[in-house]
Image 1 (tube, helix red, strand yellow):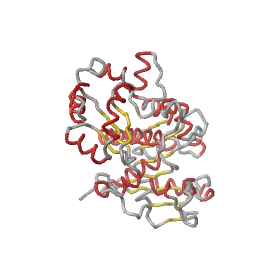
Image 2 (cartoon, rainbow, N blue to C red; image 1 turned 90 degrees about the vertical axis):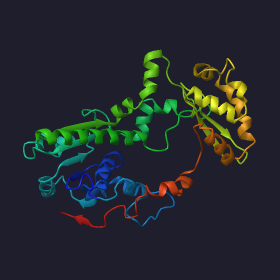
Image 3 (cartoon, rainbow, N blue to C red; image 1 turned 120 degrees about the horizontal axis):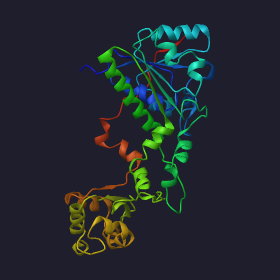
Image 4 (cartoon, rainbow, N blue to C red; image 1 turned 120 degrees about the vertical axis):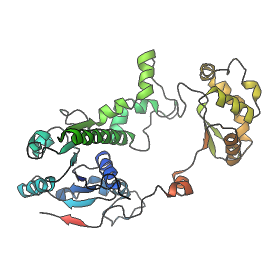
Length: 349
């Protein structure tokens, strides 16, 4: 079956996670993606980001492979005239130039949109930066999680602020850059002209605050450390330890679901209790509610409790390990083969 981006050519100068994730999106859907790495630095820095159990002799870390599947890798020093000329040659029939330049770098390497658009009028230039295009500070996802409010919400009063275990802001910025590129491709179909797109990690993080930002803007109350609890819904995020030491989390979002839940756990009296009769009351009295329902889980193993709730139509899940998830049958069809990076590596001087 033909893939939607067959015939599309992407030149990727980006490194680390967000930019390469965009490149891999196009590679998975049929585009030819040429990833340019700097031979002077040993290529993308994530090649060196290896866990303690990885093969130290391999030039490819698991991190690097996670976002570089299906690309052809070329080592070119674009700071030299010959390297720059080779890059321009590659851009002659390219559709997208993907970069993550810091402020001033696009101009320094003569790869800003205004440098390229006259020569390549159909080219779409898409750049990711940490901050705005005039701010040269380097940015990492952890710094962004701290600066944009996410760490202040993530964790519990006992744990203190915590980062999320994946680079969430990098991934959100990647999705937003993809949206910009797809919009530019659509416009190019209409007018035949390329475009310039810029997404910063900082702006992406602020946009991703979503309902938490609205909560503050409307009420003036800043979100606090709540663990997995939802500030507006209960029981939603409450986590219970079962008899086999596994956890189940609830995500009950409607009155019907709460009624079904109470019936399933044989606590129908909670449905009409004034403290729990509607969502606002349950949010206000969520700690007391948790005491009423914890016994159901303490007396059952997780699979038994989960089965009872599933039959009752109650949104809930056993907390699974990454190992459990990736070895499950339903996930197998989502896994790429282990040829994550094309073996042909071209070294151009």
